[in-house]
Image (cartoon, rainbow, N blue to C red; front, side):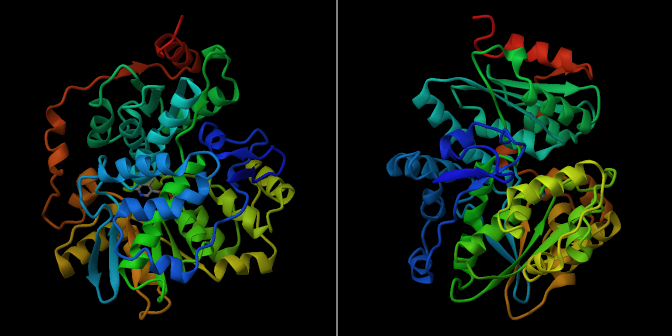
Length: 469
Ligand SMILES: *Cc1c(COP(=O)(O)O)cnc(C)c1O
């Protein structure tokens, strides 16, 4: 499989090279040159498989030519067998024909584990073969950092530097990062906000000279194709559990960077019958404004009870745009250039209507988020995290056909977001699962640095494995 850039100017790359880059050199995102398609008979033959075997079947075409089948099977098996819950992604029913797919049963209690547990192992495998060492750099407002650290902690060929805004992430989230210790793990608290952290990461990728010429930076945010790939599988898993592919399903997906839901869009193109995809946002609603009114226009960031969806611009939207423009890289470039300059952009009506045939959308504010946590708890005694609650609220508001099963992606465990759960007034608290029960007793290690890119880069240059050698 080869990968091409959404802006059409960079050369096509193999999977292993896409895995080890961030953006394409033309500023675009990598997508597969074509999508594998599965017949209904093929998908039916996967019924009842354990998650890791299904994962191998769905993902192997994307790495073919880069990773031998048996090696890939071993990596995928190890990845998903390490999840504490045997079902890996259990389904829970919350109403007639309405479900939550629990994607928070992995090591860090958010759906990002599905991709980052895999990504860490793939990166290490490829680097072992190349005998190279890389530096992973990322910024986090919470979930990405801990999932990336947990995914890469055992990688021999990786140093990982994660920047988080000092005193601006929740205590659970901070501890999930800073209590993971190891020579290759570097947590940095930056005396600034999340945007400052993200800007420093962007600038460091653009000019990597501060690291010298013996290593390179690798991205772990959702622009990395391997993350999308790792998120395809659970759409197939949910469908097979609920009568697919002989029956359609609908999904509601709490969305920030459009990564998780974009995987659902691809799963449908790969042959999985999906009737409807609901884009569920908080008040940072750029995607809702596009889907409901065909305006794509960034607005200033707002802080909400669902910090993992607090984004002003959705990076993976560009991958959808590439398809809506009939894979015309020049058109995507022009669209992104104008929105980058602050203009409001829309699509020609037929292109937008094509998106609307599949996607609906809904924006949920903090009050409605808490109301939904309370409502579902009252109805079922099932406790939602605030991100998942936004998904359920949007699913109920947008549902087209009650005879089609509606599955909301359960993106985080409620114990990760105690503030929202408390505000909902349900009067119960979610406790941390066993593997994290002593989180508040574990020692923390992190460095507090000034909001200054020079200081950050100097720290990185001095602390990666082969620094000065
Ligand atoms: C990252 C995250 C999201 C948003 O996912 P995207 O792929 O960026 O759309 C939603 N909920 C939780 C809990 C997350 O950690």
